[in-house]
Length: 347
Length: 219
Image (cartoon, rainbow over all chains, first blue to last red):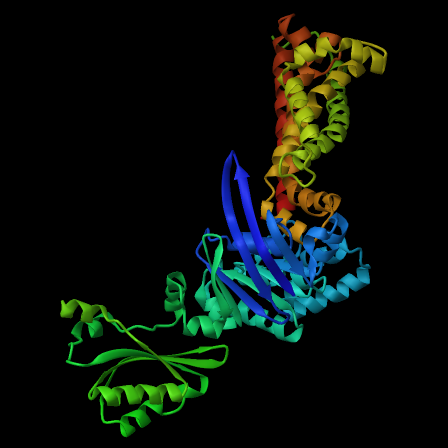
C-alpha cells in the first residue's frame, strides 16, 4: 500500500545541510494502522509528508499502491493526493468558512454538483457526530470538534489512506480517546489504511497494529506493536514502552533485595494465552525451589494480554534450570536480569 | 471674525473632487495592486508558484516606486500622464499619478495580509491536491479577506493624504482648498473647516473598515 525504499531527505538552508531522513525503509500494508513514534526532531513529520509528496525525497522512492510518486507529473500527483487524506495537529481549518464549507472544500475542488456535495457533507458530519454544527464557524468549536471536522474533510474525497500528523497532540486525554476510537472506526468500517505520527506511546498502544520507532532521521526499530512492546531492543524504544507499560521493579523493592547465595533474577514475559494460565503456580508445585515475585504487571495491546513478571529463584541449581525450561515450554519467554543492586553488593 | 472668502459651493466641489480622486485611484489602484500583491506572495521563494525571476523583477520595482515621495512622482511622470489622459492639469491629471502611487502601496499591503494566512492552511490545500489557482481562490483569499479590508482602509487614508498635493497640478480637492485659500490667503475658517472635513472622512473610513473586517472575522 505504502512503501518507502531507502528514502532520504536533506534540507539546505543558508548553506547548512540538515539530514532529516536517512535511508528509510518502511512498508505499510492495506488495512494497517501504522504508528510512527519518536521524540520531536526525529524526522517523523518529514516522513509522513513524503507519503503525500508534500516533501519530495532527496533520494530513494515513495511508492503508493505500487507506483512511485516520483514518476507522476503535477496533474497526476494532484489526482493521487485525492486518494490520501490528511489531518493535522492544529487542524488547519479555514477560519473564514463554516463547518459545512470546510468539509465541502475537497468536493468543490473536484467540481462536484451542489446536491452531491450537500449529501456527502451531511453523511460525513453524521459519521463524525457533528450534524448539528454544520452552520458553526471553527472558532466556535472545541479542539476535539475541530479535529472531527478535519477528519470529515479528509474523508470527503473517499481516500484509501489517511495520514495523521500528531492529530491528538493538541487534545486532552479524554478527547484523544474519542478521536482515536473514531480513527479505529474509520479503519474498520471504511477499510482505510491509517498512518499515524505521534510522540505518545499510549496512542500506539491504543489503536496501532504496527509501529516504527524513529531517532535522528532513522527507523531504529519496527514491527508489530505486540512484538515491539514485548521485546523492545533499543534504549529509546524501551523508554517509550516504559511510558505505558511498567516493566521494572519499584526502586524500594530493588533496594531491599538481599543477594542470597545462588539466587537469581529473571524477567518473564507472558503473551496471550500464557498470561491467563496458572503457569507459575504449576511451576512452584512441580519444582522444589523458592520463588519470590518482585514485580508483576499486565497490559492489553491489540486485544492481547501482555504480562511481565520479575521473579527471584533460589534453590538447587539443577531444579532452577528445569523450572526455567518448564516455563519456556509453556510459552513464557525468560531472560536473566542483571540487577544493579546485585552488581553493587558483589563488589 | 468668522468671515471667509469662499462659498459653500466651492467647499462642496472640493469634497466631490477629493472623493472622485480617491475613489477612481483606489479602484484602479486595487485592480493593479491586488493582483500584484498576490503575484508577490505566490512567486516568492517557497510560494505556491515560485518564480525567482519574476519575483526578482517585481520586488525592486515596487520598492523604487514606493520610495518616491508623492510630490516628486506627481511631477516626474507628467509626460506619462499627458500620454494617458492628454492633459497635465486638472483632476484627471492628478488621478494618474495617484494610481501609480497607490498601486504598489496596495501591493505591499496585500502581500503582508496574505503572508499572515496560516501556512498550515496552505499545506492542507496542497495535501488535498488543489491547483495553484484553487489555492489562491479557495484558501488564500477567503482567509485573508478581513485583513485585506483593513489594508485597503489604510490605503484609502493614505490616498486622502496624497490628494492634498494634487493642487500642484490643479487637481482640486479639499487639501488644495486648504493650501490655496486657507494657508496662502490666511483664511483660518477654511483651514479649520477642511481639517474637520478630513478628520471626519478619515474617521468614517477607518470605522467602516474596522466594522467590515470584524463582521467577516466573526469574533
